[in-house]
Image (tube, rainbow, N blue to C red):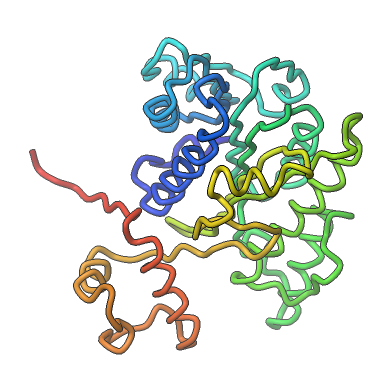
Length: 322
C-alpha cells in the first residue's frame, strides 16, 4: 500500500514535494484552522509526515493506514505521538467505512502501478464522502515502463503500453491520448485521468450542484527507477473559488496550478551537480555547464530552470561518520 520498505526519509525529491505541501497548507491555514483537521495517510514504518504535519499545525488527531502486518508493528513501536491512531487495514476498507465528522487532510500515497484501477476507484469513492474544504492529495506511479515492454519494435511496445494503460483506466482515459505515450507525457496523461475521475464523481454527490474538486499543485518526480505523480486538491464551492485563491494567495503562488494543466517536473541532481549550479545562481548557468540533463538542449534547459525554481527546497542526504 505505502511503499513501506522504501527509505522515505532519504528521498530528496520527495522532501521537496513535502516542503511544498507544507507551504500550500500554510496558505490554506490563512482561512481555515488546520489544527482542527484530521490528518490521514500511509505512514509506513517511519511515520515521517506524522511528525511533520503536527509540527506546523498542532493536529490533535491523525490516522495512519497500513495493510502489511509487520510494517504495522513497526509503526506501533515508532509512533512519535499519542494522537496517532495506527490502523492495520487497507485504504479501500477504510474509505468504504469512512465516517469522519471533522474536516480532513488525506494523502493516498499509492506506489503499485498494477493496482491503478483500484486506486482510482478509491479516489472517486473518497471524493463522494469528503467535506467542504477537505484537502486530498494523491500519489500515483507515473512510470510507463511499468506497463510492460512487449513488442519487437518501439512502435509495437508503445501500442502495447497504451492498450494496457487503457485497460486500467477505462472510460477515464482522456480522448486526446493516443499510443504515443512516453515518460515525459505520462504524468500529464495521469493528470487528465484524475481530472476525469474527479469531475465524474463530484457530479454524483447529492450536494454536487456547486462543488468542484479544485487542483492546487501537481508534481512529477523520481528518486529512483520509478517516476511518480503527486496531485493535491480541495473540495470547494465553485462560487467561492476566486475568493479562496485570493485570500490564500494560492492564485499568485509560483508552484500552484489553477487548472488541470501539466504537472511540474522536479529534476534529480547529484550533490556535485547541485553544488556547481548553486555557485552560478542566479546568472546564466546553462552555458557554464559541461554536461546536459537531456540529449534535447531545450529539455535540458527546462530541467535546469525547474531546479532554479525549486533549489531552496532541495535537501541532500549522505552518509556521515559520527
